[in-house]
Structures are given as C-alpha cells and as structure tokens.
Amino acid sequence: MKIIAVANNKGGVGKTMQCYQLACHLANSGKQVLAIDLDSQANLSSTLGVTVQRTLIPEWLIGDVKVEDIIIPSEGSYDFHKNLFVIPSSRHLASLSKLLILSESEIRKNAGRKERLLKLRIQEMSTKFDYIVIDTPPMLGDELIMSLVAANQVLIPTQAQDYSIDGLEELMDTFQIIRESENPTLEFSIIPSMVNVRRKIERQRLDELSQNFKVTPFVRNLVEMQESISVKKPIFLMGKNSKGYRDYRTLWDSLGL
Ligand SMILES: Nc1ncnc2c1ncn2[C@@H]1O[C@H](COP(=O)(O)OP(=O)(O)OP(=O)(O)O)[C@@H](O)[C@H]1O
Ligand SMILES: [Mg+2]
Image 1 (cartoon, rainbow, N blue to C red):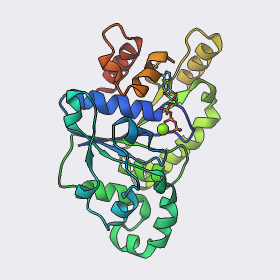
Image 2: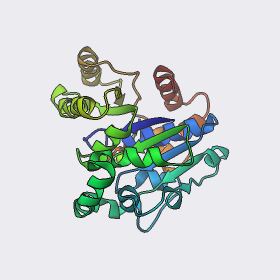
Image 3: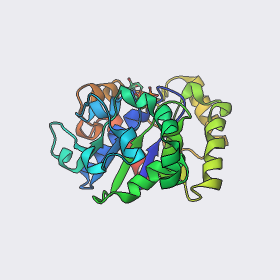
Image 4: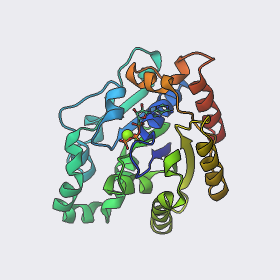
C-alpha cells in the first residue's frame, strides 16, 4: 500500500486537482484506491460524487467510529469508479483541532501523540488498498502534519507567484522536522502547477525554482482542467490530444505512478 499526500500550506495551488486526477488515474489502471479528504472545504469529496452532512473523520481518528463505517464508494459515470473509495469531509472538519484537544488523554493512551493518529488508523484498516491519496487543507495544521507522518510520498503543487523560495521554505522546514522525528523515509516532489508558459516571468520563475529544488515536469494552466472538475470527468478521458492529459501523463511517468 502506497500512501500519497498532496500538500501545500498555500491556498489554490492545485492540490485538490492533483488528488482528483491522480486518484482517478490510479483507479482506472485497475488499482484499488482510497481518497481521504482532510479539507473541510470538501472539494475532493464532491468531485468524487460524495457529499455528507457531517463528516465522521474526527470520530474515526479518535477511535470512536470504525473505518468501515466512513468509507463510501465514489460515484460517477465511469467504470473506474468501482475501484475508487472516499473518506469524505464536510465543514464540520474545521473543528478537528479543538476536538483533538478535548480527547487528549485518550489519544495519548492510544497513539502517543496526535500527529500519529492518521498513520495508526490507516495501519489498522482491514480492507487493504493499493493506494491512498490524501488531500490536505491550505494551512500548517493538524491535518497536514498527520498526513506527513502517515505518507510515504508528498506531492507539492506550487504556483508561479509562490516560486519565491521563502514560501516553500516554511513547508520544507516542517518536512525536515517530520523526517527527523516521525517519518525518516518520507519523499517529496515539487510540482510546478498552473504554469502559463507564454509568460516570460513565469518561465523565469520556473528556472529559478528548478535551480533551487528538484522539480517534476510542470502542469500548464488550461481551461480544460477546470472543465474536468466541473463536469467530473478526469483529464485522461478528454482524448489523446488533450494538453492536460499530456502534461499529467508526463508527470505521472516521472513519478512512477
Ligand atoms: N492546471 C490547471 N489549469 C487551470 N485551472 C486549474 C489547474 N489546476 C487547478 N485549477 C483550478 O484552480 C482552482 C484551484 O485549484 P484547487 O482547488 O485544486 O487548488 P487547492 O490547492 O486544492 O486549493 P485550496 O488550497 O483552496 O484547497 C480551481 O478552480 C481549479 O479548478
Ligand atoms: Mg483543495
């Protein structure tokens, strides 16, 4: 089982897009995939056809609810949906940190530290998946930290205006701490996201980024990517000539996914 988290504490950089395209692609390759939505905006859940009034993720993490009771099959028009399952989010997840504080002594007994809760719950799962893809919210909070502790690999979509090395450094510092304390084999990949190659300034920033970090092939800013989300049709179904599909195929090949 491979656990992939998609993270960046910056908002609107293409995290949920990445999760959606990757989870659908893996499911379409015949893999059993679980998408965990740890963002209270619940965009990944709704794009995968699952909306719930109130998420039970906090109760699951604390140990009051079994995982079987919160996994829901994804819904959509395509055959691959049969391989794709979701642990959905809702607005209620915004109070996760408060709830974790209230259950602190119980968590200490079970997991030692709250940062380890997600990893522990994934390890306990009786239904095994080939891949788990985790979407995270745009802040350095409990959800993001838990995901970094649980994951084998982190994908970091990064947008042109965030190419300032300072922006990424806060996240890199957090990785370093997690690696040293909880997860020494954690790997990360920086993915230039929503790139407008026609703009000189963006090409320059891309060069700067590549000089400072190892980056993957980029994904362009394309109208068809937005369409893919609004009609809930993954990019690999948009046809061989789709630019978005070409970008993603190159990206996934480079990541061995
Ligand atoms: N390659 C792309 N080309 C064009 N639009 C894109 C691309 N990737 C993402 N978008 C659009 O940009 C917006 C932000 O993307 P997305 O929701 O994936 O970002 P996010 O990092 O998950 O945001 P948040 O931090 O709020 O969770 C969405 O409207 C999405 O459809
Ligand atoms: Mg998102």
